[in-house]
Image (cartoon, rainbow, N blue to C red; front, side, top):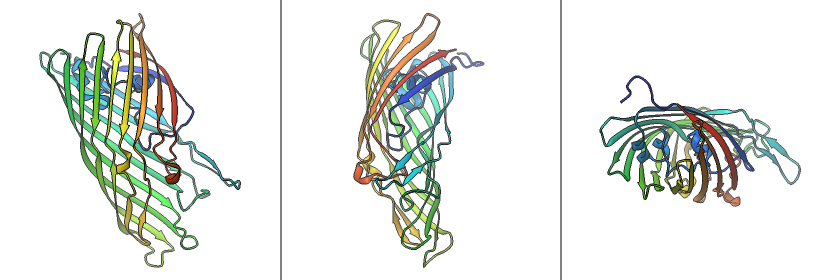
Length: 352
């Protein structure tokens, strides 16, 4: 085992082209440059440290110590124009989403160990004081950081299983007008910790075909914080306010086909149980209980990718994703405008 130098530090450049910039609800499925380049169709390959997220069973394929560090840059650039000509735009400041994955596979052992730090959900959007829908949204942010230790076991030469615990740290900030009195304003800040788990399976059906599956449990947060309700006839200062929300379970599975040692083709299906998010309520505000209606529908993502190994050692990949809209038109919220998504990606990577 190489104890002094990490045996795999990957560098990649990925270009993503999408017809819609916002989709997949609050999820941030882009957790690794190599996977992003192939449309996140990676669950049946899972052959780098980001398998901790994509399929923890896959880390049994890795040797020695391996480390992957990255950041995914996102921007919520949203514009709006009403039928009567009222317009609005969000602050499109670029935000960095970190990813760290570390794997240790001891020599002559059937067990592999991993630890990941990543952001599976998130939101930050700001319409400013001139929001065209101030009672629905002015500004909101969700921070969700996951610490994910995993353990994988190679049952035999063709089957590996993985299990992990997720320790999830979250903060919520929200501001909007109430609309009951002139100049009334509601703002909230709170944080919480929740626990969950993830499971993975990787099965080499043959030397050319593999099947992978990945499951992540739902996580329920009981946020504790404070809210300010200006112009409230009851309370005009910060008060203790509770807010509970459940983030969904999701499962993805796929097939990878390697006709030779140069090409890999993969197709995945990813299902997210958004219906559990429902309509969280801020309890104990100066205006009583304030609901926040998501009412999302569960949705699917279809992911397709291809990778070619060049003689120089570079990996050239391309992919396509179609993601269903999670937010029905009747439940549209400008704090998280969702839509159908068609996305194409290309990338090049070098493993050292």
